[in-house]
Image (cartoon, rainbow, N blue to C red):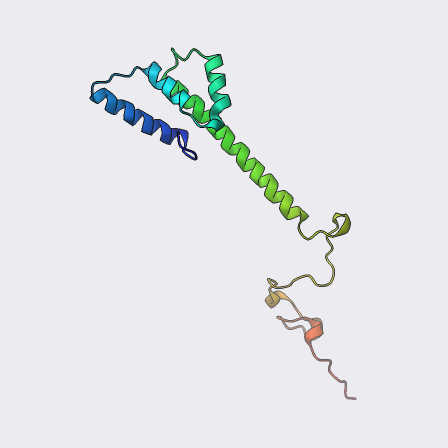
Length: 142
């Protein structure tokens, strides 16, 4: 099995080779194919292979049963990896921009780059699209 190869891809490749061997006259039994697959799995499947060998008699184990068992373990490993990646990215994003004591203030200097001013009504002139601080003070002539 190659690093990064999925269980389904590996089984497809292995069974293709086994079928070609049968066509050429070398008849491999299911037991021999199962043993070859278990022997050639990558190191990340070592604990799975050991548990399959301990729990089940590999001479009676079919190729389909082995494939389904390995698929379940592969899906579990993938979900655990995704969970760890999400944890790491969440922890990194929650610690960015924190000052002393973990406080992240919202005072002056916060960005308004993505703020849509078209919905804002001015307090002075009651027009849309600007703040009251942007309107020049009108001089009252009396």
